[in-house]
Image (cartoon, rainbow, N blue to C red; front, side, top):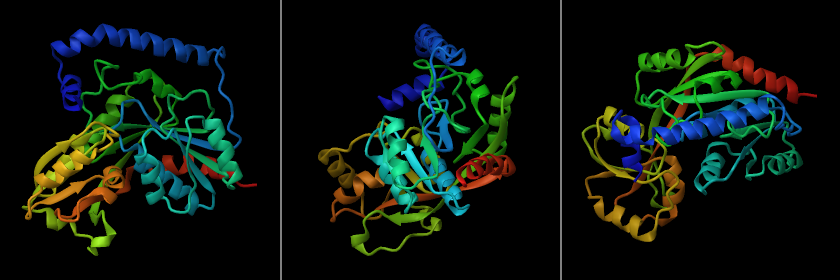
Length: 338
C-alpha cells in the first residue's frame, strides 16, 4: 500500500488527477484553520520556555528526527539544557531520540503543554519540538521547516500528494532547511530555489544526512561496526519502515551494494511472522541493513541463527546556511540563559 501511494504521488497521472478534488477540500480546510490562527480567533499558548520546532510540509521522509536530535545536541553543547518533545506516534521515534541524544530528556506526549511541564520539572531550559510545524496551538520562537531534496514530486496536497500544506505556509517559518540523502548538492540547491522563489519565503539552508558506518543491531553478537566499504559489491537486503524508503535504498546503491528491497509502511510494527520471513530471506553471504528507526524495533527480536542485522548510522552535515542556523539557535540560547 505504501509503495502504491508513493507511485501515485510521484506520477502526474489519472490516479493523482482523480484525487485532486479531495486535495482542494483538504487545502480549503487547512487554509481556513490557518486563517483562524492568523486573525486571532484560534490562539496559540506559550510553553513557558524558549521553543524551537523542527517540522516539515510533507508526510515524513525529510530527516526530521535526526535533525531534531542534532539541534538538541547543538543546544546542549552551547550550554543550554534542552528537552525533546514529540507526539509519541509509534514507539520508534522516542527510542531513536534516546539513542541519539543520551542525557537529554525525551518526552513523548501528544499534549505539548503537559510535555513542557514535564520538561521544566526535569530542569530543561529550552524545548525542541519534533514535528510541530502544523501544531499551531503552541507558540515557538524558531520554526525550522524541512523539505527533502529527494521528494521531487512533492507539489500536491494530500491525498493527491504528500503535502500537508502548500508553499504559503513557509511564511510562518524562520528557516527553510533542505535535507539530502541520495540527491546531489545541485539538486538540493534547486529544491531550495524552487521552494524559496516566492514573496515571504524565509532564508534557506542545506543539510546532508551522510552515512557513517554499519552498526550491529545486537550487541550480544560481539560484532564491531563495519566501514562503508564493506557494502561495495555485496548483495544486501534493505529493510525499512520509514517515510521515504527510496532515499535510504539509493544511499546503499550509491555505496556500491546490490540492493533487494523489503519495504513496510512508516512506523510499521513488525509482527513475529514478518521478522521470521525477513530472516529467511537473508542468505549467508548477504548483508541485512535497516535504518536506526527500524533497528530499535527489530533489535531484540532478530533470530540469532540468521545473518547479523546492521543499521546504517548517519550524521548531519551543514553544507550551506550555517550562519543562519547559528543565529536561530543563538536566539534560543540567549532566551534560555538567566
